[in-house]
Length: 321
Image 1 (tube, helix red, strand yellow):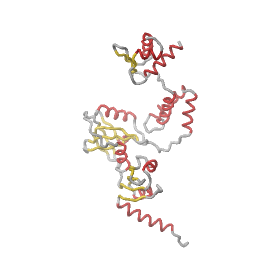
Image 2 (cartoon, helix red, strand yellow):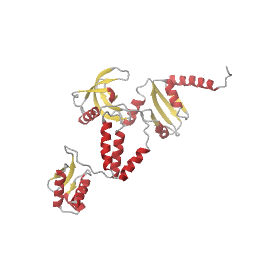
Image 3 (cartoon, rainbow, N blue to C red):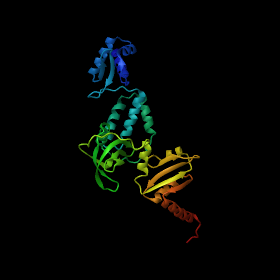
Image 4 (cartoon, helix red, strand yellow):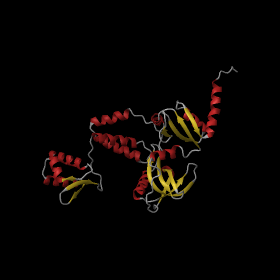
């Protein structure tokens, strides 16, 4: 019995590789006959696994079933799943935190001690730096993902940053997760242009709109496109600076949700960022601690001159009053 169980586990491990396995190759790998392979396949099916077989020369591959049978994970996969569940437990997806904690508890209960130590060591030395995430309903995320997959237009009410709400019809292209927020990149039929929507601000309507033919994406570099829409586009002032430091150094300090960083000549980079406050833009660029020049907007150039004058004056010795 133990030998049969061990062989079933080895067979299942092979079948979980995304390919079709000829019966002869499985028999050779496991050192058994073709007849034994067929019996073992039948046992896996009795346990709830869906194993597809091809006609003619027998070939087998694992398929998805109606239920979730036990999974086989190697050491690295188990650690990765545990870390992922721990991250999901503090995510901004409504309701997923408790579910992730339950799944993580089940996984840790069966982890060998050596793997529990690896997961525990990583958790003990990790400090989350991100602020609180904006919660979204996982049902909304899955509904959007399904619409992307089936090329169905979405209808939704959308609340803008100033609180006004209107109805939109859009062709969804991609979901983007910034760590704190979820965004939808879609073609807005009413605006006849690409738009980026915060998922927590939209309320889906049913049924979906008509099916659509996919358009060319808004940019070949989707990460840059989203970064510009999030870090620059929504704001009153759009700053453009030359920063005299390598782009990779500045990018490591400025996530895509805060700025767009482009390499320039001689180890410098161009930085684009937005704000509703000139003071905030001025202090934000100054705190980088490296030389820079301001190109846009003109109001910021004047504002920094005035601010610099005030700061220099404040630093001069003044007679006591």
